[in-house]
Figure 1: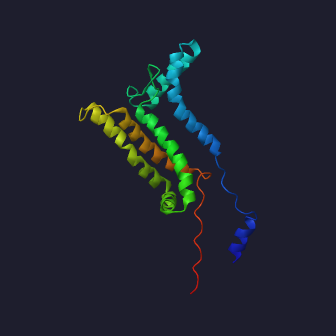
Figure 2: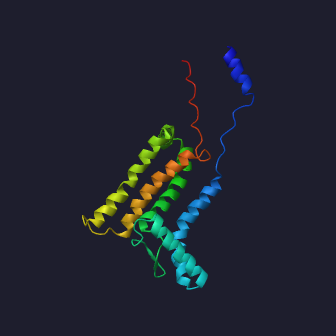
Figure 3: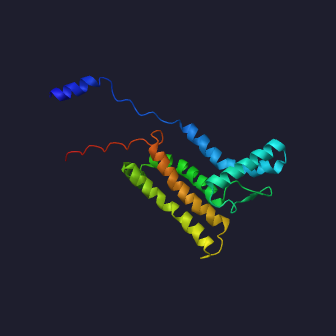
Length: 192
């Protein structure tokens, strides 16, 4: 009893909710990830010194440090996008997850329960589950390099990236308290 009183007296204020990242900031980051690779070739196509340099810099940085296969990019204005179709598909998947999770959580159906079960898992387990769709990336890259199959069309790379981006989006949003409210408490059982 004394320990309970001591614990309650040391915390006289109710628990404060965790600080959340503003959702608009997440949306801005997703917009930059989605639009940036598409804008870079358009900047290069202007042939204006500063814009062309910015487009070339973005293409160089993303193609050298982020994207594993920048040569497999969609063409825009006679220039390749700054990332391959797979990487750009990942940003599409992130956006789909951004739209899907809030809608699924509001629907209160089986998908809602599945998402809450996913969030109830330890973070490391969630990360391992989310990495499974990404295993198709190295398999596809190695298979093409070893000539196990022909170079896949860009739409296949886009879908491959989108499914992995969708999984990553669900994972990222499960880490951010502003996106994911706790599940509603079950209704008390009624006495017969």
